[in-house]
Image (cartoon, rainbow, N blue to C red):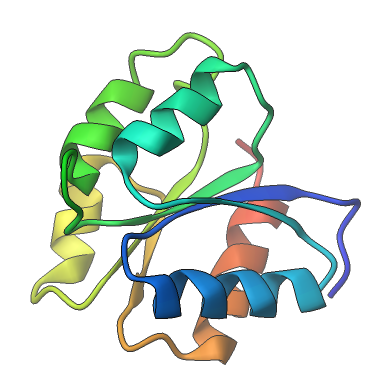
Length: 126
């Protein structure tokens, strides 16, 4: 499932989850950029780096996923970027929908689900 070097931003405060997603996605040919929280991720976006997809945890220190996504939607160059919520929260489907995310991945992360959801979102028209 190799894509034309799509770039994915992974915003996750737990190192194990962050590194697992990075390893799996890189093994599939993606370029992966990592951020430990929403503030670090917003700094990357403010550099006008181009990302094709964002994977975002909901529970993070300093700026949670909901605050981060609201800030992203105000950035002109990134307002329409697809975002996948990654969380173990209950009612994750409705939470992701309410936030305007394009999908979700439940924790603990299932590698097949991760790859399927990423592929579905990258192949769909914006």
